[in-house]
Length: 352
Length: 286
Image 1: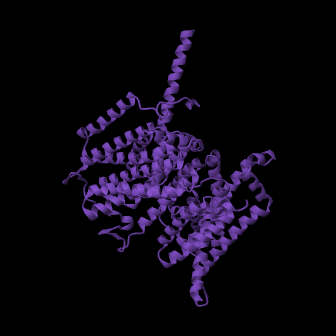
Image 2 (image 1 turned 45 degrees about the horizontal axis):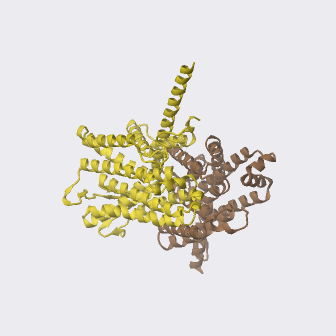
């Protein structure tokens, strides 16, 4: 209907460098995030940090889906894998910096391996989604099955569905005596979120990013132009696997705890809902969607309405059927449409 | 002789479970190209329906059939309310049915509570060559074979089957010769849902029924139908046999989770070699 015109966030040609208004908005948001702890209590900071972590996870999925056109349902698997890698290594070695690096590298490597089999197997997009989902399900099932005493990595018991509690606090890399407390974790999550957001946005302006968007628009044409789309898809899938792993590490740092719930079907569904509600064709969409839905689920929980699952299911179905674009693109499209109406209205008056 | 018999029984049983849980999906996903993530919940509704109906005092076989019919009706309602707007938008069917699946889980949990309910069955055991097997498990193998054969006969040799295949192959042409494709889609989806419901009802006496049980079957069902390839029924049978044999043998030798992970790894390697699935290189057919 009214959304045919290009919308400010969604359909700006992604190859263009972001303008000064974008940089101002990002800088303002970053300053606000940095100043927020001055006014907020620790428990609010604690809740907000996890919002940032989930937003990073949502970005890793929204980027693949909205800009490359591949719907990966395996991001929660990389999320869980990142968290577990960090947990096992930090408990074993006592050194958290190395564990963070490994917590990013291992999910990225797993994404590369899985992606190789799927992308180079020329599996269609549909099967790609289903297989990533199935991998997630089996991974979670595998973790749940490790409750016995024989499942030990180094000195750490995997504990099956009880998860691994009591992770060490994150140390500052250059001074292992200093550890991050709740406010430190908040700053870390905020900085990582802003950096990931800026990095992904700038990547779209590079040649690499232009090819990615080209793949979304018409993969065959990109291949005929001489780009091997498989290589680009594998690279960006690996990148987003690493970002999801990083979010998993931050989750483990935040709660000092990892559990198979990180990678279960519910978490995967929530992730989709965050992205689809916010709108995947705008990079800020997944962040907004995460904020809205996390707030909503928390509120539903405290209201005693119960059955968060029921409401989430209804939201997902309705958004797919009716608000397919998501909040941010729909709203910005609406704004453009309104501007047009006002402008044409005033022109008509002036002419008359 | 006896160990061979035990293995044969274990493998036949594992295959029959694969066939049961993926047959409905083979119709809905394999034929209609609707990625139905609510498939697990249709199975769950069948199991729940079976416990409710047999709780009324009806015999088990009647409860199973009743549960299958009820789930078929629920499938038709879901098709009218959600799925029919999404034909041709394959990824959207995945997302919408995922929402549907959460909705069903939430609804059933609200109405019936989160606990596991069970269905009693008292068919006892049968002893063959000094090896004792539960009669119910043997019956399950037979039911799986009957459902598969029945669906194949229905699609292959009846007028209804011909109409359904025509519609799935070329909806425009089917409409041009006067078929009501809208109704065909609706009823085919209902039939697939009914198969899932029957599977759930048959499984219920073995494993019980909980609102969240769908998640245990959804991964296996999708692996089977995808690996089976473009011929839904023959593909489901071959993929079920392959995975059932692997799952049965590995799970019997180690643990059931190891069996499932082995199946997944085999499936991914298989799809690397045969991207179109096992039946991808066959002549067109069922």
